[in-house]
Image (cartoon, rainbow, N blue to C red; front, side):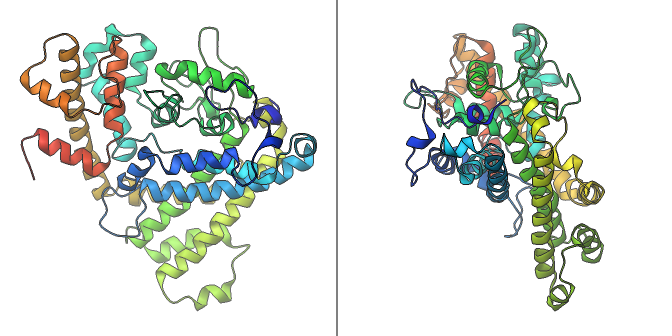
Length: 447
């Protein structure tokens, strides 16, 4: 892979190449991407989607929206600093094409801002709930009516693939979705492969999948434009990652490792003394002990350590990327950046505590269990109505359900897979509260 191609400013539908030197410096294309994500309705709904604690009533616990904003800030720093180093190594990118360090920051920040835009309600348990509907629930009856890859899309419903769908899918009046630059789309795609085969290698980019069969052509168009390296066996679509996707992943890893841990402390799920011990291990080389001891309350102490920890891991990720840039361009770097970190043990200790004390807390588990029931019922009612209508068998109840479905999604496609996927996509756009409210309405409860 080469950087000039990887930094493509092309947008869906472009006929002519967009040149960096021709860009308006006050309205750079990569920065337009950030604005388009921010103003999208799908991004706004993240304000009421679970990050760690479902439907928390406290004002300092992160939602998917605040998490995404913080990840984008960390990603911007990573991108700018890497951009400086890339331009020193490949000076022609600046002298001949006009690229600047902030271009890298804008690309990675925009991709990071959108990284959770496809997540359904109730966090990762929402993805699993959609999948279980087709693996073990009423949706299993469709297994032999669609292709294996289409069925796998549904059984392993993936927020990353759903995010790519949001960013790229066309509808009347909105051709090409948000029409982001292809460089931003490339940085967004953490898993540049289709749903089958599952985990064909131990490469980090094969851990999950990054696009549904419905967006296969859009994905291939992006991969070709960026010059991504093909990696799949004959008949399977798989590519090596865009290098900047490693930075998006690192920004996400840094934020959920440190900030989810901070939420757990502020909620009292993790004892302060216990937590401080783990954070101090991570920042012992940079902490100002005198300043730390001047802080008189838990929140200030945790905030200080969190800021130091994030900065430490940003610098660590930059060093690892720079040291392995050739392997990353060749597609032979097989792990996430922080997996190579000298702080790996400390990071793993923090994640282990978060899993035990936060992600498996009673409150989280209770809400995840409820989420399964909510999503299963919504899917069943919508899918039944959509398919009955397509087959000319809609009941009066089905017709009422059809009236409340949005006009922006095609629920009447001739392809069964598209009807099923579009219902899943519709449910995925719900906020946590909207999903619960709709469930109550379908259950005959108006309040």
